[in-house]
Structures are given as C-alpha cells and as structure tokens.
Length: 246
Image 1 (cartoon, one colour):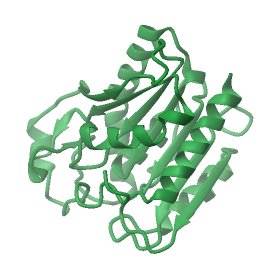
Image 2 (cartoon, helix red, strand yellow):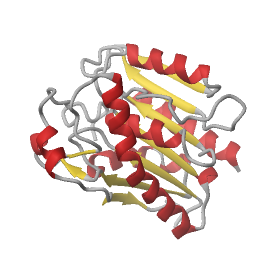
Image 3 (cartoon, rainbow, N blue to C red):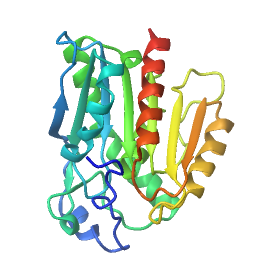
C-alpha cells in the first residue's frame, strides 16, 4: 500500500455503470477475502472488520492492518470481499450496484447490503467467542457507508467505527439519544474529487444530533485516499476504543 491508498481502485461509476450487474445478480453472501492474524500469536481478543470501497477488494483493504498491529497485537483483521462483482472495475467488488447518488438511493443500497455484513459479523463473533464490545468496523468510501450503517445499528454497541473518504447514507433505524452507540472517527481529504469533503461535515452534524460521539479530521490536500496522518489517527482511535470497551 502506498501512503495514499485506494486512490485508483475506488473510482465511482456513472449512474448506469453497475446497474445491469446488480439486476441480474442477486448475491447475499460475503466472499472470504484477506485476513491478518493477531501479532501476539494468541487467540483473537478483538476483531477489526475492514470494508473496502466500490470496485476494490478485501485484498486491497487488508493493507491497512500492518500499520495497526503493534497498537492492537491481539486483534484479528478481517477484510472480506463484498458479495457482488462489479463488472466495470475488473476484478473489483461492490457492496451494492450504484444506480445514483440521491440520498434515498444510497440509503436503500446500504440497507440492502447490510444483512450480509451482519451475518458475517455474527458468524465471526460466535466463532471466536467475542461480543460487539470486541468489534470495530473500518470502511473506505462505499465501505464507510457500510461501516456506519451496520456499526450504528447493531443490537449492542460496537467498540468503534472508523470511516475514510465516505459518507453517512441515512439515520433511519439508528437508536435515538440515550441508547449506547459506538464512537465514530471520520477522516476525509480536502481535495477529494469523488466524495466531496462536505460529506464529512454533514455526517458529523447528523451523528451529533443522534448523540453519537464523533471525531472528524480533514487531511489538507489529500484526494480520495488515506494518508499517513489518517492511518495514525485510525490506529490510535481503535486502540483507545478497545481499551475503553473492556
């Protein structure tokens, strides 16, 4: 991974790009992608679920993990492929076929993809005898949409959610103020030409309204990618989130 990762593997489509694939392919099961075992060599005490962007894959997203292992030596990093192949992006995957960028369309898309991620989470938590308090979700771009959608709607609060270069697709179904919710870190490049930086400010406002503890950082001059500062912020946020959830 370069210091500014995913900049070439997450170019969102035109309105028509993956619609036909989505209509003819109804896949609901996540594809096992890449993983990185705990550096400690012990059984996992935490799981960090890495959700890739549109047209990318778990193989790309797992490249974040080595930057964070020292801070979370007992964490298992899982980076599955999304359920659907994306025909416009070569070997890439999509969480859902993007048919437009209207808020209602994005919210519906995230809702349609969420059950597969929830099922994957349930399976992995049961497999390792862990709970939501031992789970963090990290997303990039379309993966950020999914990390926020799923992470804020689990029956019990997860340890934390980190989102890079993405947006909040909607708040329907997110518990109201007074219900424990995961803390959120959102990182966005000021020069992002795919998902405008305004998205992070809109998400911050909505999450604050719902009583979510949210931290944001805008990386000056960074495009649709993750820079070294964003990597460090994500690492420190996750390590602290796991410490506070125990």
